[in-house]
Image (cartoon, rainbow, N blue to C red; front, side):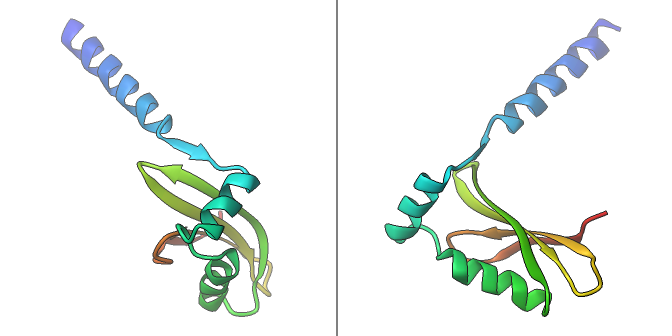
Length: 102
């Protein structure tokens, strides 16, 4: 039982530590990264997301740093009212996640 408790505690610490590796970037920092050419422009990233769901509109965007990568999160709403959550690598523009919000 002690081994199971210790394993559970170690797993919980590991999961909690992983959450601490992601941080939201404020507008000033995001603009600085864009202006420095570190990340793609927000217009380019939005266009990539909108190309996957034509006719959609951008509802919300966020830039975060996770594990040394810049991730652009974007929420879209399509013409049928369906919401989509996407994540793009803000440096390369590669789509990392594209799924319907449930």
